[in-house]
Image (cartoon, rainbow, N blue to C red; front, side, top):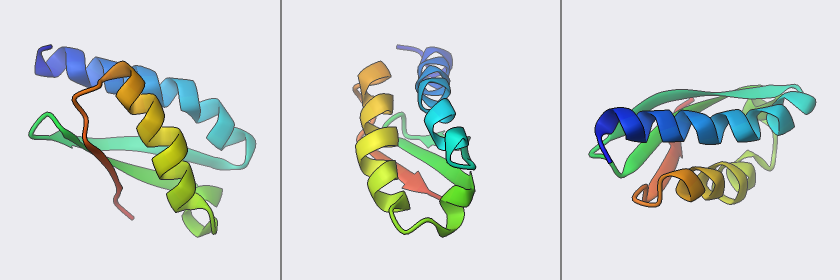
Length: 79
């Protein structure tokens, strides 16, 4: 998978999860993909102060991204 294809797949994953975040007043932005195995995102809106945002990041966002791009090993929230 080329780096452009990887970025496109990560964006597809974010598009899949974005409606769930937006329904709770939040959102997510892709910041970068490093070494083709680490994704940095920024949780926004209501997600910033949410007490379960780390759970959302790991069980929702990371799982969805790995479905589209299995080589991704971690997803990091940059605040």
